[in-house]
Image (cartoon, rainbow, N blue to C red; front, side, top):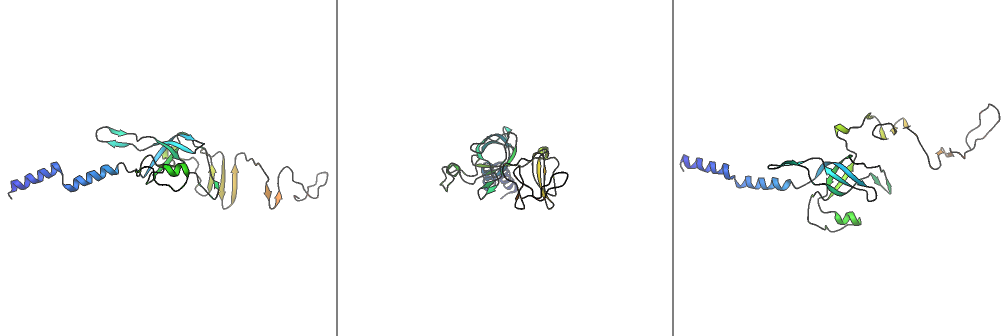
Amino acid sequence: MTPDEIQKIERNKNIVGSVEDTHQAAMEGMMKDVHTCLPGIVQSFNPVNQTAEVQPAIQRVFTERGAVNLPLCVDVPVVFPGGGGFFFTFPISAGDECVLVFSERCMDGWAIDGAISEPEDYRSHDLSDAFAFVGVNSVAKKLSGFNASAAEIRNRAGTVKMVFSNAGIVVTGNFTVNGQVIANGKRIDETHKHSGVTTGGGQSGVVV
């Protein structure tokens, strides 16, 4: 084979591409439709069904059209921490940031019936099958006054909060109790009584 023939083959490779390059390009194209995890922004929340409409916050880039928004994810179950019949719930508002995690199979049957079910569609890692974990914050929406040494249940501004640390529990803001308050086996509410009650400026005894 002459040097000219070798150069012609190399030029054709650059134009057409090898079989490996073709397979690689095809795989990369398919992977663009495989969704695993994305940040999202809540557009609306349905408190009856506890589902949300969420806009994926990372755009897809096309060679011809440039960057475009991914379709809105609808009827997305919102994940609230819970177990054993108890849950920690909180209000969801438009604009809240979240993490979208996509099921590897169609989850429509489970979402409706809450039971082990056969997939109703053969789609995989699709935008239609997302869960929303609400509570992640971008730097632009980070919490103010973050406590790095204790656990907190708080509002975004930190003006209402319950702080849990090794020293105990501290509540900031109004604290309302509906029901009995029991301290060391004694009721502390509007019905409790004291022992050793005397008139005048003395002090009563312990709670009965």
